[in-house]
Image 1: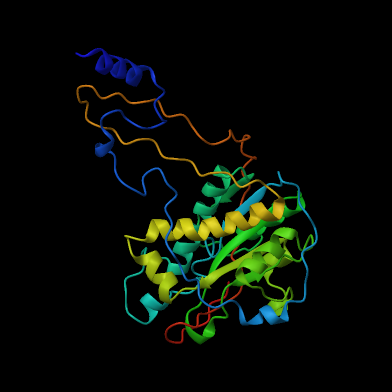
Image 2: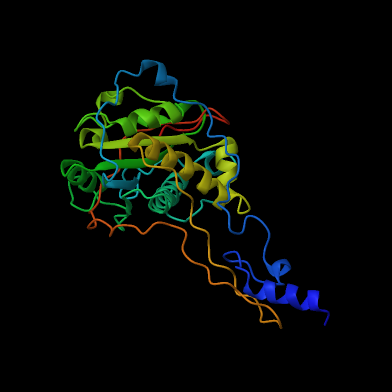
Length: 317
């Protein structure tokens, strides 16, 4: 081997290897979105028509480490306040995403889980609560969203319940219904700027806001939003996109620096001669131990619909 070739080989061996990059086997790695936070454009539709009637201002500024509890609307009230079935199921006759559950509840759960997951990766003190029981008749049962959210708010935390609005003319569009108990916060204000808003006394003050839980209507369950969620090829990226908007907005409201998302571990590659894998280290800052589990909150009582597509029955939150 010529001297210069031998020297080049030695330099190749001792030079630092980029994290998660295998030598001589890059072609074996999957292409994007591997190692990236995959998103897709998602149109959440019109903002709440009641945004022009906003009668509140979120001034209370929580600390950066404020405990955030994310809840899924209707997760504890499927046979009481089930949520909207969505345009695809109600109008087009599509199969529900999960038998025995409205599509809204299904997406409320998936979205709330994703928000909590990405929020933790971004350094927020955030967690998700799932009552586990899908129908709890007593709103004050300690397992409900209402009970869990109320206790969380009373302890100084911030509780956010995720919903999707009804399709068609029954829906009002995306927006924030702010908490009443405890007063509106800068998180509520920033979310309202991002998604739109409802008056604080919407429908005479809903059960969740009355207990200190803010409601976020992501958008009407119809059109591009629903299509991107139901399509298996775009579902994961759509959930990422929605969760990213919520988490980024909350982080800005709290003044939390925008950090990166965790890069997944490399897929296992078949061993091949001359291939060396560099050890991948976690890129995320270590998180403080999760706060003690909360217990649960009851479904919000509010219905909203969507403008895209045909008219649908209004569904209480």
